[in-house]
Length: 139
Image (cartoon, rainbow, N blue to C red; front, top):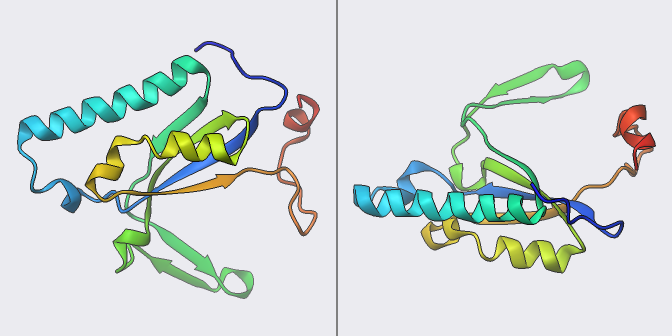
């Protein structure tokens, strides 16, 4: 990975929604292979530019913990699979416009995928510690 990051770079997360296999059922094996190659080229290009830090698909099974003391535990996946997050890519870019431009070039958009762009922040509105002391010293 080239280190093209600048002090003005900020961490953003691209959250991929509607990534289920049903989106690819109508494709031939060759078309699916081309989609995978385009997806990999997209990510590897970002890594080579130093724009992507990491990315990972997520398993569809989930647990949702809620209630006082974690009293409610609900197993997923949930009925609205379009809302489920199927994976993510973490970017280090200048601003939300650059993150949005990168997201808009993702080949999965051609197959119904939706991408949520969110900036990461070390400052929780409640004042909760969101970074380790070691990570905070490195910034």
